[in-house]
Amino acid sequence: MKRREETTPAIPEPTLARLHRYMTVLRRLRREGRRLVSSESLGQESGTPSALVRKDLTHLECYGQRGVGYETEALLDSLHQALGPEETRPLVIIGAGNLGVALSGYAGFDMQGYHIVGIFDADPTVVGIFHRGFVVRPMTDLPSVVKATGARIAVLAVPASHAQEAADQCVAAGLRGLLNFAPFRIQVPSAIEVRQVDLSEDLQLLNYQLKRSSSAVELGEK
Amino acid sequence: MKRREETTPAIPEPTLARLHRYMTVLRRLRREGRRLVSSESLGQESGTPSALVRKDLTHLECYGQRGVGYETEALLDSLHQALGPEETRPLVIIGAGNLGVALSGYAGFDMQGYHIVGIFDADPTVVGIFHRGFVVRPMTDLPSVVKATGARIAVLAVPASHAQEAADQCVAAGLRGLLNFAPFRIQVPSAIEVRQVDLSEDLQLLNYQLKRSSSAVELGEK
DNA sequence: CTTTGTGAAATTTTTCACAGCG
DNA sequence: CGCTGTGAAAAATTTCACAAAG
Image 1 (cartoon, protein in one colour):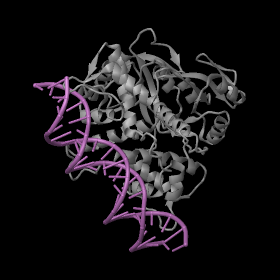
Image 2 (cartoon, chains in turn brown, green, yellow, cyan; image 1 turned 180 degrees about the horizontal axis):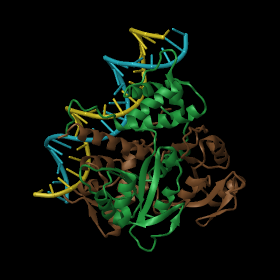
Image 3 (tube, chains in turn cyan, yellow, green, blue; image 1 turned 90 degrees about the horizontal axis):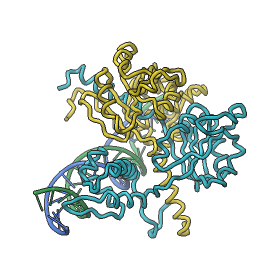
Image 4 (cartoon, chains in turn blue, brown, red, green; image 1 turned 90 degrees about the vertical axis):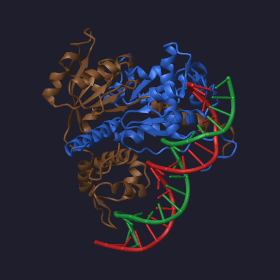
C-alpha cells in the first residue's frame, strides 16, 4: 500500500486537523477585518505553539513575510486549495433517529462548507415526517438523490446493528465517503473512505481529566 | 508543571481515547452475551492492532489469561475504574440554539453514562421554550441547578462571540469541566478543565481523504 | 527589531517479535 | 497450541533554537 513518488505526499493527520482549526480562526479574523496574522497569534487563537503553526503551514504553498506575518486572505486561499474549496458541498444524512435529526438541525455544518441535501431512513414509520425543513425519505430514494445533487458524503447516524446495511446501501448509491457515528466498524470496498466518530469521546476524556485533577487536589497537590 | 512521584502517571491521551472505544465495544459484546475477548478481536472491532490493544490495557489493572483472552466483565470493570464509573453523570447544556437543542436530543450521551439535567440560554426570547422534554432556563438559574443536581460538566453550545461570557458564568456557578463547541479559545482559571471540540473536523478530514484518493485515481494509481 | 522557515534534538506513540504462561 | 505481556526498535510528531529576511 505504498504511494508512488509522483503523488503529493499526504499531510499527516494531526497537521490536517490543526490546519482546519486555523481555517476556522482565520475566517473569524477575516470577518473582523484583520489583514495580517502572525504564527504567534494564530497559535494563541487555536491553542498551538507558534513553531508548530509555522511547521504546519509549510505543507501548503503560502509565504509569510518575515518580520510581518501572513496575509489573512492569502493564507485562507492556500488552506482552501489544500483542504478543499470554500463553496459548499452536498451531504446526506442516513438515519432519522435522535442523532440524525440532531445533526440535520446543526447549522454549523453550513458555515463550514457543507449543506444537507436529504435525510433518509429505512423505517417506513418515520419516512415522510418533517424535521427542520426536511422530509425524511425512504432509503430507496437515495440513489436518485445522490445522482441529482452530486452528494459524495453520507453521515451515518443509525444504530450499530444497522450500520453495515446502511453503509452497503450508501456505497451502492454511489457515495464515496462515510462519516460513521455508529459504534460499529463497517466494512467497505477499498475505494470508499470511512471515518469513525464518537460524540461522547471528548466527554469521556474531559471526565478523566476532571477525575485526575480532583484526586490531585485530595493528595495535596502543590 | 511536573507531577509528583506519588501521583498515578497520567494515561496518554491517544490511549485514553482508545480505552473509551474498547469500552463501547465491550458493552455491546456484553449485551451479546460474550464472556471472553481476545486482544485480536477487540482490535478488530475497534480498529486497532492487537499489540496496541494489549499495550493499552497495561495501563489498567486487568489480567488476561494467556492462551484464552480477557473476561469481558472484568475488563469492563477495570475500564470503569480507570475512566469513571458506569453510573450516569449529570450534565448541563449552555445555549439553546441549533447545536444546543441538537445535543439535548442526542440519546447517545445517556448510553455513554451522561444525562442532561438542564438547558440554559442567556437570550430571554428563547427562555421558556420546550425542547425534547426540557424547558430552556435562564442563565441566572444555572447556579441553583448545578447545586441541586451536582452537575460538574457543561457543554458550551453558544456562538464564539458569547463563549467567554458563558464560560465565566459556568465557572461562577461551580462547574468544573467545560466541553466547548464554540470555535473560540476560552480563558478559565487553572482548576477548570476545558476541551475544545469541532463537529466539522471529521467532515473536513474525510473530505481531504476523498480529494486525495480521487486525484490518485486520476493519476493512474495502481 | 520582529517574525518566518527549518534543521537537529527530544519526545511520544506505534510496531515488532518473541519469551512465557495456562 | 494460543494469546498475553513487554522490551527493544522504528516511526511519527513536537519542541528547540537560531540563521536569515524584510
